[in-house]
Length: 522
Ligand code: PEP
Ligand code: MG
Image (cartoon, rainbow, N blue to C red):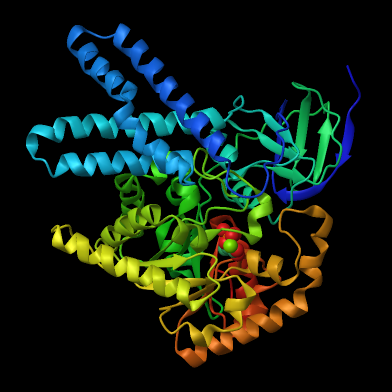
């Protein structure tokens, strides 16, 4: 048997797990910008062909009546008239999934106004819209065996989210960074992760122990771990009741419904950040208003009257939606967040409608990611007003939610007084520090600059807190700094008293804040 060997890296998510290595295929880094029109056309053609093949197989296994319906759906998909508008949208530069969803949505809307006789056909089209979107996502998503250790250069958040971690497993990355989105997800889900391992000579199936606490990967370990797979139920101690701690109010960040289920609602003052791009991690979900609403309804109902802040899709950068947005870490300075949404108003309107409907169910606020200029907020506010009016005309219950902005772009952070329309501010320290220090959050070679820029960061946080106070607007911190026990005392001292953090950090932050005020934990 081969001797054990330790490979040093950096800790990114605590915990230990053993499993066989799964070596992820190295894919070429996509060129900056949107995927080419040719790629999008080919992707949609392949997805339609896959959907036709799936329907054919289903029809062959079905009774005569069901087969008739499925054959009708196949005919629809093969009908050039149905698919032409989607290809026309691709020619105008839209991504494949967005083009397909938009074109099919337009078909469905037309049928809906044509009366009951067409309602059945609309249902077929809705079914086809989802099937082709699933096919588009499936072609780009590659899962790996349960309990395996994912070994790769880096890991796209969408691949992490598509995997079932309840059976154990871990992540070992040659590059990567503890500040990346996938590391945030791993910490929230209790999946051990080590990054920055450099050249990793590990074979597929080699037994690995990943120690995400120490930041070490052991090749051919002799030990066995008896610990059960990660417990997703990260329950906060009862001492957290109400989310009050040492002069601060503690809120939770939620990335997935598993995080929500694991959270004791009484342990926090509310939800300060829902990263909806992780909640609706597939194009078929992100392009379906009802699926947005269903997810938001679950959160609002579970929080039972406590405030819930839902952030609009923060796509772009390393956050991909397979079939809709390619993961492109090079675009962190590009069309991310609100910029992407304003460039894709169909998607923004769809999400706005679901958010307006969710706001009728409880105290929901909406956060806009990556805002740079007041005009971006005004444009989104106008879009919300229009959609709220449209829903009211249609007799659909809704409430126009207050809109706040993420403070994570230095240009916005320095000009909060100009954002008169913002109902509240939420500081995204993860992005703010990367843009402030010009050091990408997923690049280990420059990670030391984040800590190095601490003085600049705290000066800017002081400016932000002062400006928010002067404007009479609530301000919270929802980046990872709010979950750092060594930093929270300074945040509170600056007047940043609303902290939103991963549920797994609540205990440590509570203890740190109580230590500061001399309060007895408990
Ligand atoms: C941040 O940037 O600090 C933040 C909370 O948003 P995200 O980590 O999703 O970019
Ligand atoms: Mg951010």
